[in-house]
Image (cartoon, rainbow, N blue to C red; front, side):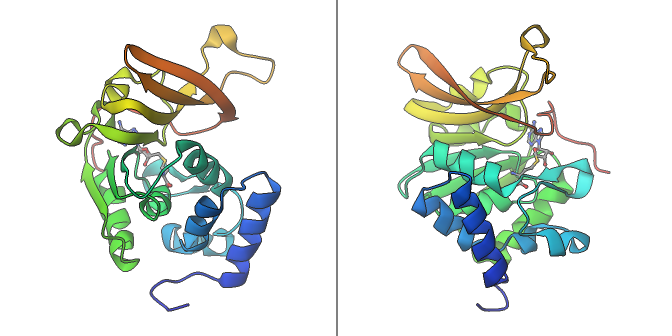
Length: 225
Ligand code: SAH
């Protein structure tokens, strides 16, 4: 593997085997993860843990998602190479990079400019040219570029984000972590449910997938740290 692509083949293969054991069977998704060196997306202090199946801290108090969750969300999104996809919450850019290998064009929005600039440098380093990114409030989507075939939100919304669903094509899918209302909390506490929202002619349908833990989706653009 070339230096610029980065990545430790044996550690990546181990990660792929772990994901397979955990039920990720989609070969295209596993292939995209295999070709995306996660060590490029973590801070230097965590490089040794880059291929462990865990979330890690990144700048601005945010996190890079656990590989299993990235793989699961990507598989449920059902992306093809003809699709235009919107991501809310660029963060490190790892999920963006995995998606960009599977779709035609990825649009990604991040509220922290610091994170966005670092993610953009990583996209350039990896030669990912089909990503368009911007700093902004992702709760409003990307109205100029709608409609999208798919939308992925990588921060937890308090309710179904209908503004985003409105920017999907009919039949389009959004994968979104949504807070579980306190009234429905179980003995394990409240938390978040990963939901698959499908846009229909007259609204949307919702299917709940798995319990997850994401940083919150926050309104507005961040003041720089
Ligand atoms: N997909 C990322 C995970 C990032 S964590 C990765 O693979 O690394 C979630 C990100 O969502 C954070 O960077 C946070 O700043 C961002 N975020 C939260 N609310 C947002 C909003 N309203 N608009 C855009 N980004 C938002």
